[in-house]
Amino acid sequence: MDASGFYAATEYGRLMVQNVAPLMTELEPEDFYLLSGIEQGMRFSEWVATEKIPEFSRLTPENVDYRLDRCEDRGLIERKTIQYQGFKLTFEGYDALALHALIERDTIEAFGAPLGVGKESDVFEVKSYKPLALKFHREGYTNFREVMKEREYTSDKDHVSWQYTARKAAEREYDALEALYPDVSVPRPIDQNRHAIVMEKIDGTELCRTKLEDEQVVPILDLILVELQTAYDEGYVHADMSEYNVFVNTEGATIFDWPQAVPTEHENSDELLARDVENLVGYFRRKYPHEIPEIDTDVVARTIADGEFESVETTP
Ligand SMILES: Nc1ncnc2c1ncn2[C@@H]1O[C@H](COP(=O)(O)OP(=O)(O)OP(=O)(O)O)[C@@H](O)[C@H]1O
Ligand SMILES: [Mg+2]
Image 1 (cartoon, helix red, strand yellow):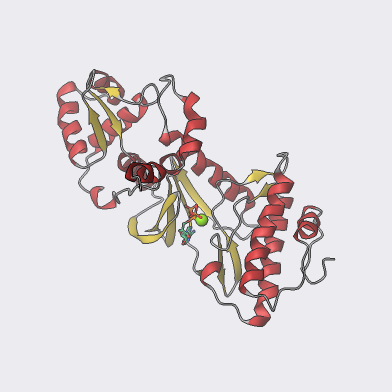
Image 2 (cartoon, helix red, strand yellow):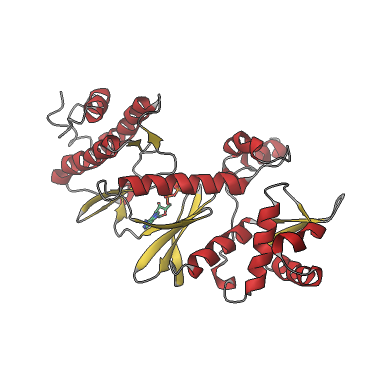
């Protein structure tokens, strides 16, 4: 067995990102000037030369030196010393900037427990006037192919910008939630900054962890398909539909995780809708084989696109 081959296959997997919330009280306003100065510099190159940081951050060179050490000690920035000395933000530094902005805007008052770790995100409970959910997107960190596509973004040819990829994903998800809420049962969008979105916290259990009563199976499947139909009518296909992205509770079902949603004008949207329906129905079929009737999922998908879906039991 070749150990290096094994590592090659996993090295782009999900890396741990430390929770920066406990650091927030130690950081001073000028630390955020420094971080946001480095963020600005990173639009031009992956590593921001130390001598450029005073200008970007509007701090004196002495103050910059002091704060570079503070922020490096806390894992918010990373230093390189080959060719020239430069710095870049870590994902933790980017998290700190987003959290700071959301706190300044009074979107968030307190930080809570993790709600979920996805393949491409970290989700935490946060509090304001009520409990909310904060999702940090990590796309550029996990999906190497996606990162490669974004390579053109910076002037520095080899500069792979995970910030850009993660921020775009957050913006796409937030836009979809804004378009769909409240007609479709999705978490209410509250705010967005950089790669973070704040939304309503959903109480319930993921569909994958739910054991439905026999008589609930078809009504719940119908309910979710009707939500997909409303979303389609509002111009979106989810495109990552699965039992992991649906919450069920006593009030019904809520569909979350929308960053990859595709507008219905998109040429592949009907194919993606058919795949969503197939994924969902396939799950129900495997888990509840005796409750699910014979279903032609392509017909169901077409019925949804036509806005005429009511139940899998009445769809031919
Ligand atoms: N609004 C919310 N309220 C409560 N919990 C949430 C909320 N949004 C997400 N979560 C929790 O966080 C987890 C990850 O969220 P989400 O599915 O949006 O991220 P993801 O990284 O795209 O996941 P994956 O790609 O693994 O499906 C969910 O499985 C869920 O447990
Ligand atoms: Mg998910």
